[in-house]
Each structure stands twice: as structure tokens, then as C-alpha cells.
Image (cartoon, rainbow, N blue to C red; front, side, top):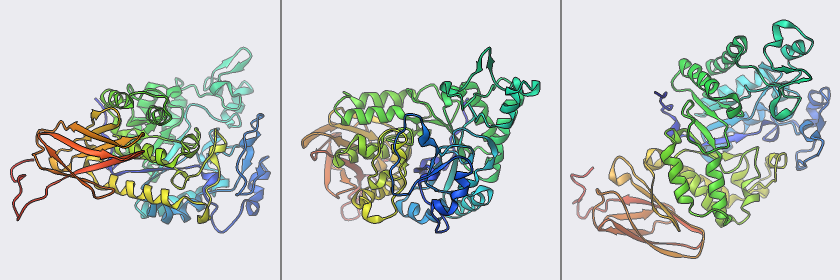
Amino acid sequence: MHYPLPSWLSESVIYQIFPDRFAIGKGKTVYDKAELYTKRGGKLVNWNVPPKYKSDASHVMEFYGGDLWGIAEKLDYLKDLGVNLIYTTPIFLSPSNHKYDTVDYMRIDSQFGGERAFKYYLKKAKGNGFRVMLDGVFNHLSKENEWFKKALRGDKTHVSKFTFYKNGYRSWNNFEGMPEWNWEELEVRNYLLSVVEHYLRLGIDGWRLDVGFDVGYVNNALINSRAKSVSTEKYIVTETWNFPSNWTVVDGIMNYHFREVVLGYLKGEFRNPAQALKKAYDETPNIYGCWNMLDSHDTERLATVIPDKASRKLAVVLQFTYPGVPFVYYGTEIGLTGGRDPECRAPMPWNEELWDNELREFYKKLINIRKQEIALKIGGFEVMNEEPIVFLRKAPYVLDDVIVAVNKDSEKNVSVSVPDGRLLAGTTFVDLMTGEEFWIVGGVLKFSVPHKGFRILKALDKSKKGYTQYKRIY
């Protein structure tokens, strides 16, 4: 038995924000807020200077000054883009700029504006029709946490909350700054589940669970169960970097498998992606709750991996037409580049002259199509051709069917058998991007796909003089 997915999820397009790098609110710069950072050993960096990797990891203490006030001020930008679910990386008190080392889950970091800014952002976002997700780092914490510091000193009431060895303690990936929680300890479990519940009751719509595979199946299930007890409309997604099956204990995962398949295909490294995407679809019952990832704060930027814009657009088309929730990493819609962490976490440029506006318009169009077409939200997934990739998103009502084709090479004429016996001969399919029309005969549809191009084709009933052959067909 599984919990149902939230009813609003199929309408959602996610936008991920790394708060220190998105926008600084109230007309300020990082230098106006210097003390918030310097008193904790942070280094201030000018907004226009790209982040650079440092082998001693000192880049995690470089701050640009973005905050929750800033996100609240940019909601109009997000509204115009068309996204409607905002996911921010962690916002709780923490020494680093990424905040994946939580000191106190019940305190919003003052660098982001504290409790006041959080409540303002939440209220304004909800008032503007956005859903809001937070990042829950429940596998590990900061060694600056009070309980951990006491445990380190041998305080018996806290030692069992962590795992100590003869000469050290268990920490995430052996980073000594991130000791791992001992979830088997009842007090730990109850505490972390109370954190999950607290913010859901404040009005957030869900949690993304950091390093979900480390948290483990049982604890993912417990978190999901606690969330659903608040409301079955709350949404839990876990971070895993594996094949997406076997994670039905939560609503979905961050589908990095999708990313590897699609980008590998466009780079010429991965053969028959259609088969891989079909297998993932077939074996993942909660695929509609998974995130269709192309980049994130943990990967190279999409524009860096696929510099050729025409090819990159094909990746974005697949992201918006494959079953799952489309996921846009801030700045990817304007062509922001960046290598591995921390270079993929550059500040959002708000000078529009630096934007790829044509790309942003392309995103807006796709987001709109995704929101309009029921087949892209809940339709099935059937592969009709492997190269170029052609698939059917089969809808409950025949005239809602959508066919998607993606062609990474030279122009191709394709002829595909469309496995939907309700489609009558002579039915028109119209390209939702260009308006071109093609016709199906005997269940076979013929059309061309341009060089490095795509088609998003929708069935259309062209009735003649008020007569429709679909009068008794559903």
C-alpha cells in the first residue's frame, strides 16, 4: 500500500533556488550585511565574481549575501516564467554557505533574514499561488550542534544519539564536520520527525530529503508517514542517484537517472535512451512523483555539459514531456553556465543583458504546453521509435493524446505505428510549437523531424461542417 500523490503535483513545475546566490532583498549588498558573515568566519564576495573551487574547501565559507527577502522580491520573475513550486536548499542555522551542516533545525539562519524573512517569504509565495518546499538534512548535522558537542564531551544523555568509535565518530562520507544522526535512537527519531511536522504545519508543502539513501528506506517511510498524517497533500521527495525503482516509500526521487540517460544520449555516449526511459517508467510506480532533473546545485550546469543550444533544447523538451515533475535549476532558463560544485552555484545575474532571452522564452512556452496538456501531466508512456526518439503520452480521452519526437541528428522523415485504437483515419496531429499539421491513416502517422529538432504533436478533431467522426468515441 502506498500513499496517494498530492492532487496538485501533476500541475507543478519546480524551480530550485540556492538562497545565498539568488537575490539580496531590501536593496542591500553583501557588504551592507557584512557582520552576519564575518563574525562567523565567512568571507564576502562580490555578486559578479564567479565562485571557484578551492582544494581546501574554503569556498564553502564564501558568501554572496542572497536571502529569503530577495526570493520574495523575485516572485514576479518566477510567475512570469511559469514555475509554481519553489524548492530552496537548506535555510536553517549553519556555518557554511550551503547549509547542509545544520546547527539548529528550529532556527532560520539570520544570514537569510531569520524567522521574519521566512514567514514573509512563505506568506507572499503562498499568496501568489506558489507551493514551497524545504530541504531536510536529516542524515547528519553540524559538529557545532549543542547535542553533539555534549556527546563529544562524554555526556551520557547524548552519546547514543550518534555513533562513536574508539578513535572518532561516524560522519557523512567521513567529513568530520558532518556527524551522522543515530536514527535508531528513539529520541533522535522523534525529534527529527517533529521538525518535519513543525514546518509542514507552518504551511510548507513538502520536504526534499538530503542524501535519502543514507537516511534509509525505513526512515524515509517514517518521514513520509508523518508528513501524510499532517495532510495527504504534503509531498516528500528523496535524493538518490540510482535507477528510480524501489523508492515507493516516498512520493518520488530526484531522478538523476533521467539526467544521465538524456545527457549521455545527446553527447553520443548512450545508445537507445528510449528503452532506458521506458524501463524506468515501467519499473517505477511513483514515476509521476519523481523530479525530471537536468542539473542542480550538485552537478555541472546544463549549458556547460551541452553547450550547443539546439541540442540542449532537446534535453529540455524531454524534461517537460517525460512522466514526472519538470525541474528547473535557477538560471538554467537564461543559459547560466558553471562547472562542478561550487562553480554551478554562481549568483543569478539580474542584468537582463546577460540573459539568453530566446532560451527563456522557449522555457516559458514549454512550461505553458506542459500546464495545458493533460497527457503530459498524467498520460501513459509508450515508445514508438528509438532513433529519432518518438513516444506517445496516451491520455484517458483520445483527443488529448500527445506524440513527442526528438531528433539529435539530420532531418528525418518518420512513419510510426501509434498504439491507440481510438484514433480514426484522417485525424489531424498539430505541432504545438509550429502549428504544422500531419495526418494519421490506419493507425500510422508520418511526419518530418527537423535537424536537431523536435515535435510535440497533439490530436485534433477537425470537424467538417459541424460533423465530427469522434461523435461516439472516447
